[in-house]
Image 1 (cartoon, rainbow, N blue to C red):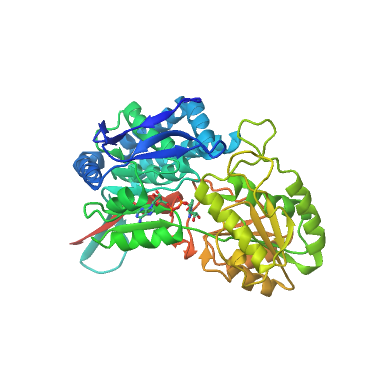
Image 2: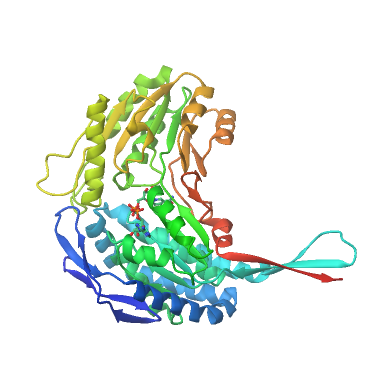
Length: 484
Ligand code: NAD
């Protein structure tokens, strides 16, 4: 998988690679802007066969013990380990990620699968439990049962890991799955089919269909024979998926966009604050759902922090993934480049004060590179303050009091994550309790370990992935009440 063209014209359905007669979708290298290969689009009929395979495989797969399923899950993570070098190379070419960030997509997937393998084993003991209550003559037990066949619709920003966040708990719970990778970064998620073969997964437990959202994604979202749709992507698409899913009645998990604040109080360690704020918008070129795109800083330290921030901005080295010393790659696609540079244009029209960057990176002959960008004193009503940009663009506003900081931080339609930087533990706890977001970080970077929860308040989503909550997302609860 070095520099050669990658062509995937098959879907992985019922344990076999089936030819897909669908339209070719070119996959583009964001550094050269040239195709690196293509996938073929699965039709609604292909999706139908994949869903039928997942349904046929469900009774036997769900009848295995958790420990038996855990062994398969561990073999999937072994398959990723075995192909790591090729997968990382492919991810760098397809997404323009720096080497360490490309690798993290796979090490994160392995960590997640291994965690859910342990959860599958633990499920054997938890599967049936007495309910303690005091009604004479009656007794109840609960049973945890797998939800059924599930469809996954995936984004391109962390293609593999975000699939692992769904696949680990689904397989652990006893569900079978149909995976639809993003058409922008489809190759490494198609690898799940190869991994399933290497792991010896029974046919139909894991299926992969490629294609665009409007065709393949929509067919999956509206399929009446799935019991769950787990979607990660933009809030706009999430609403369409939710609407399509009402074709039947199915469970739905939505991991959507964000516009996460980082709130820096005057007692903060300013070096740490500058590093966290920069890291929070530069990781994956800012294409993170939890990017810390809104910096709220207390008035008294605004100037000092801005200086330190500019030092952090100056350290960024833009480049192709294999350029020595590069720290930030291009945006992943032309559409994303147009969107981010479009926001920079809006900033000009709005008259925002730009302290760094503010446009495409002119030093490259090709590639979707944009400058790391800092706007300060951004008005509350600015589109850049309110909308998810998904690029290396940081917007700064200042506040006078803790009360104002909380109000500003919460004044958004999103609620995915939030960061607090303060040396005062009591303040950190107080503010964390008041912020409306699914994951609050204090004095640390926005990492997402599989043991914690992930998901958003408000327009950032429905449900939680990871941790025991992620597993619960693929389980039904059945209570059996009997005469004692
Ligand atoms: P997107 O919404 O454009 O696409 C996501 C997926 O939905 C793709 O597979 C696409 O093919 C599919 N799709 C598009 N239209 C569809 C339709 N009508 N029916 C069914 N499927 C359809 O998102 P993206 O650009 O791939 O990803 C970026 C977005 O994802 C950002 O908003 C980001 O915040 C969000 N995201 C959220 C999380 C999270 O955990 N909350 C994680 C990563 C990314």
